[in-house]
Length: 119
Image (cartoon, rainbow, N blue to C red):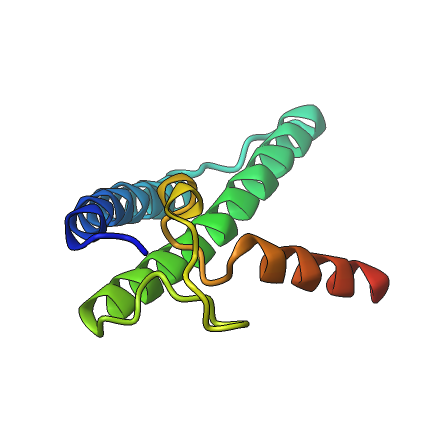
């Protein structure tokens, strides 16, 4: 079981990650607004590719913000560190590596195997 001190350390890390990710999202929003349409086809193709990469990163960041907020909510509700699949403790090593984890490694592996069967 993870200690209260470890949870507080993780909470602070999550808050920092949340702030950094939200800041990046705000900067990306401004970049999308500031884009100018260039004249030639090669420039437009490069610009479209760049925008697609930025859009993909933005979607990833939005999902990350959601998972961070969910982890912070679980900390606040004293429900942090328990697997949503089996109810067992999530290992502290896993929580330190991926503080927003909702599942223990066994349940996460099962979910990934199950979803890959339908992909």
